[in-house]
Image (cartoon, rainbow, N blue to C red):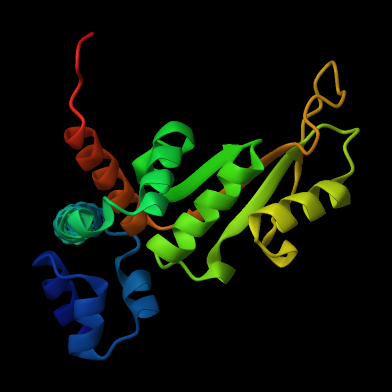
Length: 223
């Protein structure tokens, strides 16, 4: 028996991995695999090593996920605190009030998806929310997106021209139009439904805090 094979077997019986033995003896893993392929005790060691490696990997993953969770929660709390700090300066601004009221009534309420989004058929409301994003929230205008929901008999280009003109959002920022194909695909809305959105968990956290603080300014009064 080759001396290195003899040593390799001793190392393997001690529970060493192919990688460790290959590194120590400078023997290719393929050679080790050939040496140990018919040794049942080696297969048992492989099973134990794999189980141990999986356990360690899962433990590291849990630790990493916990660390990430703490990091992102601190990041979100920083955004919420910024919103609290800015509220007193903003609460008398009509555009700010309009924006958070529009979002309170029409906005996406699922905070985890990070979509700051409203949908409506009223062009003035869509225009005001666009101004709220740009002026109050400092969102670059090219980052704001718009989509439309239309019935099949509505002209997509005409609706796109209407919403672009009334909202101030360039047609280059429009995404794919969704068509409603129900049992009665007739024109029920002259220009369809417009959706204005911007993806930002930070901004969504702030808007939710602003709405919460605004509610506290006007506590429920029983009449």
